Amino acid sequence: MNWTDERVELLKKLWSEGLSASQIAAQLGGVSRNAVIGKVHRLKLSGRGKTTTAAPRSKKPAPAPVAAPRPTTTSSSSMSSGSASAPQPTMRATVMKTSGAAALQAEVLADAVAEPIIRHNENVVVPISRHLTLLQLTERTCKWPVGDPLHEDFHFCGHESGESSPYCSYHSKLAFQPTAERRRAR
DNA sequence: CCCTGATTCGC
DNA sequence: GCGAATCAGG
Image (cartoon, rainbow, N blue to C red; front, side, top):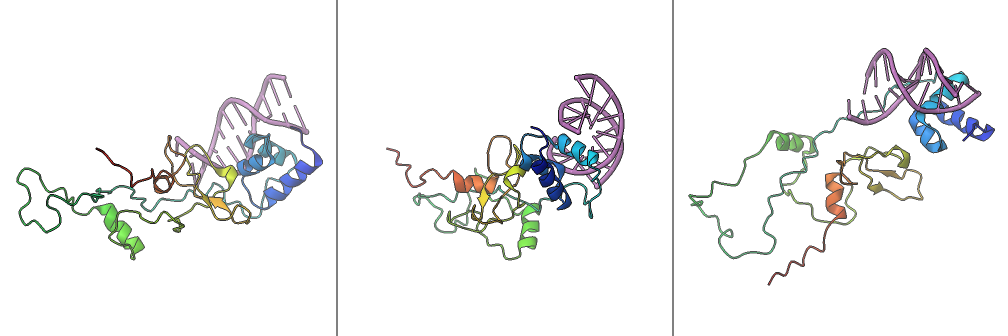
């Protein structure tokens, strides 16, 4: 790729708009972040109104994806229904009382419900979003799309997704729901 | 570790 | 002029 007038123009525009070098590189396509920076310097456009150096390393409040005690999907046979006042002597309570994380989350959300399980697979509003653009996605960012692709504020979740999954824990659950009600063992 | 821009220097 | 490698920093 070579720096055509168009590309240079776009570069100038994006750079002045405050986009980072990597973002610009991604949008231009065919060039690396370094290439963009190098070009920027050669064009002597280093300064930008507000250089908020470094991306907003957003701190994660507390995803708290854990705590999914399997509420016993269908079974309703032995015990459980009532409030067994005498827990099994052998089985230590599997309750696991609270946790710092849980408490913190409750504090933040305030409105949080006592339902550790996500139910509606529909268009529940995503918890949080880093509001990443397509080109900002990396190997470890959640690629769950948010919003209307035809609309300008379309973006991606962008949460931590781990190395294997393309989505964060939250969206993985929404994405990979294997026809739940179908475990008909014999 | 991820990301940011800045510089250097061989091509 | 170009941009990978490297540096310096958040």
